[in-house]
Length: 234
Ligand code: 5GP
Image (cartoon, rainbow, N blue to C red; front, side):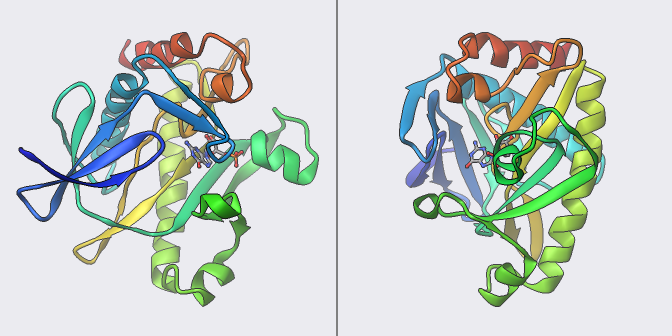
């Protein structure tokens, strides 16, 4: 598939048109940013690892009946995806308190939630992706009621599938962020699922094996990403 015009460049990925108007190419970069791009760096081979991890997880979800934008892996850094119109909501699923939820409610990181928590954040870096609810999303026309119901149902299903998958790899799925998009009348899971977008802790030691190592200057960032991939493919 030939790469066409660059149509989007984000913090960690580029998206290109192809000769097929319904298909895009998503390319994963090694660039890493945090805190609305006020912290910048590169994580060696992150793009290659996140491309592989996302492929494995999209395949897993598809096998369990979740429709995603993933078509096929093209090479080390690129995957072919279905063209979607991204819904401007970041859906966060949380199983254990960390990050934003710990700060918002002054809770200790590591508190295991009695049931998963779903949050919507409005996708806008200049506003720091603010926490919103269904009523904001509906009233501001970000998604229809039917779309929100579907997104909610899919997000809980995805959480069940991923939590159990990672548990078998001795990893705790603390939380993660999802994005969805519209494609030919359907809502597909889009973007990526990787240690950039998930918090993953070792089950025994609670060691962080995700982007928090970069965000919080914990060191061993590359090794953590490699370790996640190694466990996933073991
Ligand atoms: P928090 O709201 O605690 O900062 O993030 C919750 C989860 O969603 C974490 O796993 C985090 O990695 C992911 N997440 C939330 N917003 C973003 C974002 O803008 N970019 C990335 N890469 N991940 C995000």
